[in-house]
Length: 516
Image 1 (cartoon, rainbow, N blue to C red):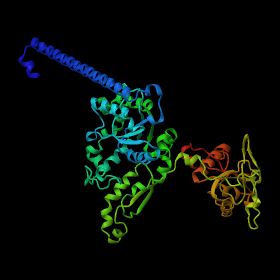
Image 2 (image 1 turned 90 degrees about the vertical axis):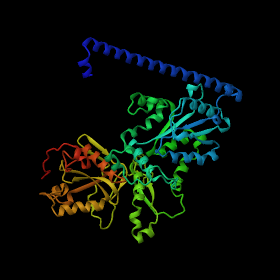
Image 3 (image 1 turned 60 degrees about the horizontal axis):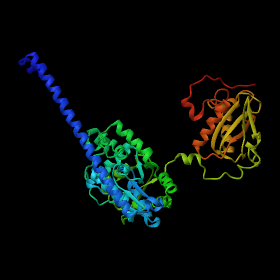
């Protein structure tokens, strides 16, 4: 362009620029016309296919328009996203099809391409909706969402799918290409022999771990439009979210697959009756298809746990180098997962409280043991009051009660000598510990500091259980923190902080609690 300015006079330069702009506008206009013509052709072909489908539908099943929809006319379409536990879920459908009397069909596309041509879309819709011998049917395959109403079908299939954390899905797919899975262990994979880890791939900027591959789940919900496969497209994301909300009956999450199956059994019993029990009892059977006795390696499940399987396989040669280990573990260990703690386990108690905890005598009572020193300091109050704060004791407790949150007060009535603690031991064992700190005059501990001060001794202790029947350390500490905050014993008492929540609170000045 600089050479053009030197050779050509200014007027010719201006004419050249104008001519270039006109040519670009002309080309853009022609491209737009081609796009419009292509759209018209697609709509014409679609209308033709719709007429053919309607004619065939009317000829094959003339009563359907009059007779309503039955449960045996249901079609489920599971356009499965790769590496989201789709094989495990599909196997449940295969196992239940004979018992629940429906058909399972695999959608097999050329080269596993999730996008079908317009003609193939029309044929697929025609085949699925008119193949009455295969109804009710469960179709599954790695295909993008397809809008059946675009082809004149009034009764749409029921769409289901499962999604997964994008990074975890990509990591799983990365190792799948190199090591395969337990369902077809003998099949040679495309990247078999590549020992590079996922982290090494990321560091080297490899194509198999490129960030663009995190986008893969979006097009499966967006559809067959070319824009759906444009990585980062805002329109594609919004379309995928719209379809997920409006076109899918249920979308599960890989990490909560059992909950997804339970919901399906409740919503679609025609297909999934017995699915939950099958999933629970059959979870490990599909991992042991080979005849060898593989050593089990059981770990608690976490999002990155799938990588352990590939790590175990890649390190098998280390085991084989030692003849004793090779005899004990001749093949890679069988990886199995335990269910991790979840919200359901936290808020639901499977164990009923004991009769003692539900007794009508709500209070802390002495155990009346011959050698028990704690009986002498038991506080039997059922209502604990401090200023305008009140706590009602529910349940019957004694010196033998364990897993409790307790309150220590001073028998001499020191107003600030309140201490709230928790213990997994029995109340007797914990109070023996407090008495030991008092005897040793350990000023670094709040109870020992107060009750070893002038005019006090361990006989001035008063103790009562505030709440019992707690399952674990986490629950005890949560209840302890709530009661400390309720009675403000971290500000005006012997507690020096809010327990395990102290790291989230601002430090405050406090003085030693001494009374005479």
